[in-house]
Image (tube, rainbow, N blue to C red; front, side, top):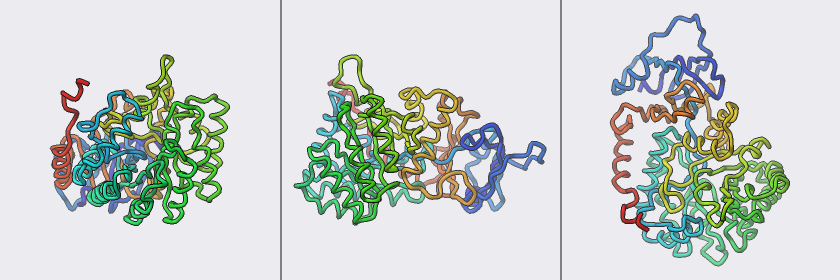
Length: 459
């Protein structure tokens, strides 16, 4: 499609490059080919406004299209480095009365045998497409792997996830990381290897929940080395300052030569430690070249549930980790499930929540937060050709605002999303989708999931 694969953009603001300048960009065959500051005295190109083009139903033409962004902000496609797509929209059937992590884990584990592969796939499609509509073009999702009931139940989620990944591949990328169950040494460990052979992208887990965390971590590293895949672990998602499995993860990373291939998530315990203790652990993380992900929205919701005032809120030390040179992203985590009843897969919303939680409101902080939903998570996912760089694939989101301060203040709903060589979402189109297949996916997945029933809330 000429209007999608070969396109020029003028009067563009690039906040991750130089927000004070206007740029002219070119896309040919879906790749960036020209990124230049726009000369003030250059002849204005024959162009149409993004607004007018959007309402023109995207008719295919053989001529080159030049779109005038009129000073709107263009960012690389957002990267959500930690989601649980398979759990999304499960709050209709899995409650959490206490609001604690412990009850969420217990209740979801008990309910997981009742979920069909079709239901799991529909939830994944719905939540992934919702994230795409807000500008996310790459997702890493952790997957429930419930071996305590049976191998079939554990692998059912893997099959659903692989099918969702394949269906969405023309429009966005998904990375799949099954979570090794904790205390799993007596379980069917061969099923974990089967999942890795089926084609998932890495291996995960939550060893801090285990009675034998070091043994669990050793096993996960052994599997990762055998199948040559990266590791992504939930670490120390607790208010307990004595929980420090991340130290052992850092140690094993260096011993196995896995530097740069291990990600640690949550790290809530760092928020309960003294500055001295936390600083020592962050140094060890840096030495092991660990990558990190913070989940501020969900941690604010789940942590501190056992405290009387003052209440700990669990959000890790975002600024200190970033300032130590460790790539750290912020991500969505859960959407409308027993772990988190809210969320919508909008990383701008997550960046704003991070700003509140981490006291990051200065102009420089806001631009750092934009990097925490773009460049930093791209490093977490190991994306080798990411960003607004000549020769790289053009995946981006245009936000209806002219400054970083404006988009954090207004969280503009109007966004234009370009992914995998096409505009997939524009504000003025029916159901927001510019593609019939995506519209059909959205309709089918939306019909299969629902929000919490009113009678459920009475508890």
